[in-house]
Image (cartoon, rainbow, N blue to C red):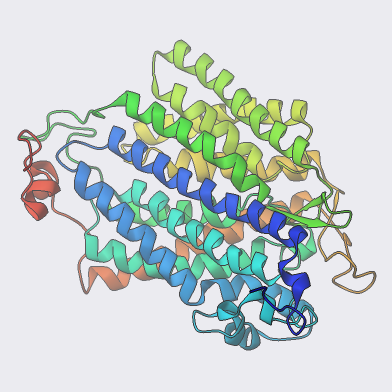
Length: 450
């Protein structure tokens, strides 16, 4: 029996809509590959006595952030488009919280005059919820083996909510900073700089792990157990990110015309080639640093630093430009990392890669592409939300860096004060050295499990 669409809204479920739905769904798949890659990196870089506990805390933290985003986080990000139309955050929450009208409606039952392309927005809940969870995984790299599970899980919930507010401010086309000329194609500000800001506070509170800088009776020296797994994890991340790039674009008539999430002119081919050039540029300089210093870590830092440096401008660079920007990124990571090692600061990823290289990348967008039209929304020709009315500027890029790191610093400081007086924040050195797999789960890393 044929489905009767005469009284429904067939244009919401057309073939054109399905193609766009598949593009955004691919972004979800890419995000899941990134999660897998990050977990592989964790396995390769965490002491075997803590590896299961570290991994499972990342997984649970991911789903806490994921669930919080479904609950209400998406409503914060989507509110920029409601405000553009004269509505309020309250209106957005009514429509898009977990029990909201539009978040629970079948696409063919929603009048496009009320909300066109609703499937895309519903898929975006899943897509951005993955990143709310990824933020928690990234944060956990900075506090792994040292922060109590209860403290991390509470932090994961609030980090998801605050990062959702920050995404409204910094990522989209009509959010407060973007509409003034701040440009961030990939979400560097709320995905990378925000947890890095939190790490600035938590790392100081938690101190170094046993054996990291000085011997402990049970941990003479801290050694990553599986460097090959680190490389596999990094390449898995590399494989997942191209699908996410597709989901950072909007598509308008003609049907394959792409603009970036900030409404900057772009195209799929250029964005993907920029991504490839960013990895290549970072890998080349990383290799130079590694062989010059005889430190293999820069072989791993290099491609990641190149990607992070280029991520904010994947839509607007030309491939040769982003190659040279990314070629310089490992040097930024090198300077920060070596300084931290000399100061015995036990943090090896978020501060050199995200706080340092992420800030560098955002600033380079302002230096190299000042004046590029962004902001507003397609079809609006005048007023504060007119299509491409704003211009990228170095000043707005600097404001975005300060706001994003500031959100993380303030959030972590408030949470650390509360957690130290309630659940406690830090795992003891003795338990860290003994191994949380054994202390919490009764697992012995030297014996096979049943």
